[in-house]
Image (cartoon, rainbow, N blue to C red; front, side, top):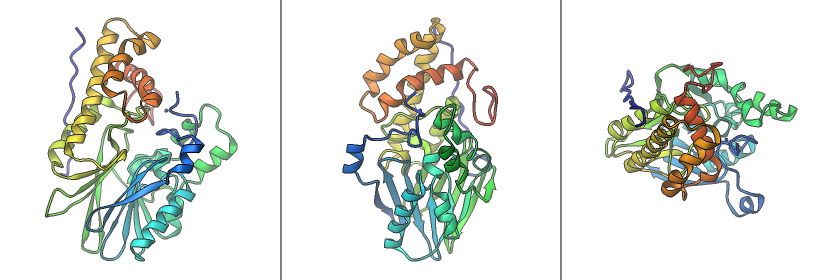
Amino acid sequence: MPPKIRYPLLIPAVILSSLLCGPHAFGATPQPQEQAKKARFTVQSIADGVYAVIAARDGNTGFVVGDDGVAVIDTLTSSDAARELLTEIRKVTSMPVRFVVNTHYHLDHTGGNAVFAAEGATIVAHRNVRTWTRTENLKFFGPSPKPEQKAMVERIALPTLVYDDGIELFLGSRRLVVRHFPGHTGGDSIVVVPDGSHGGVVFCGDLLWKTHLPNLIDASTGLWIGTLAEFAIVYAGSTFVPGHGEVAETADVGVFRNYLVTLWEAVAKAQAAGKSGDALVDAVLPGLKEKYGEWGFFTNFAKSNILQAGEELSGKKRLPGSRRGSAP
């Protein structure tokens, strides 16, 4: 019998093995032939003045057009990608980009910050994002990053406006509600664009992945399960923009939460039977493949998800800002 696991439901005060071998390894990088066939991203209008940018090679992003300016949510992996995004924004509006919100520190969501900083945007994020962007991102290049890789990370423009629990931003009369939630990295935020006519839009960053296995390198999975349960209640009826995958709805939040629960419980059961290392992977992987083998990034992240969940359950996982497995 596996140990009983509690999944906390947290209410905020205010209501990559293949993983990490290069700058695109937060998800999975298509091969060159695939890249040539695919646009970097597609832009979708999902509400009045609200656009989801669904990326093929980076983390998803998006932007919101208000009365006197624009807010951008995440900036893709590189300056080149961010300039492409800015070109798309300029097709919609000539108003200035006033804010960039980084949903977390990972390179595929922050790498283009400098392009928007040069446009005069204020970069906004949880305070851990400012602390970790130029340090923790180096691990994604392996134990010995090359000088050019270090230089790329050191060039990322840092947030200049930080918060602990959240902040509200205004584009004239248009309000954006930014809130910190635990789960993916310890510095994650969502951006809610309220809409009185329906549930509004929630940009989730990598707190939500639609039919894609997640990167768990920095995850606190038990807390993340609680966060997703809260999303399904507090933001029911909203349109969700995940960090990876297509635009989602409330049911998709539950589907992704079920993946984390399935992984967590399967790993706990195998560990209770004495499994670790390769034996743990061998015990858990077939069941995951049966249920989730068609999801994106399965071959990239399935084994590392199992091992990292095992490290977390055994108290051995290193999280950002800590030498051992304590929360940052």
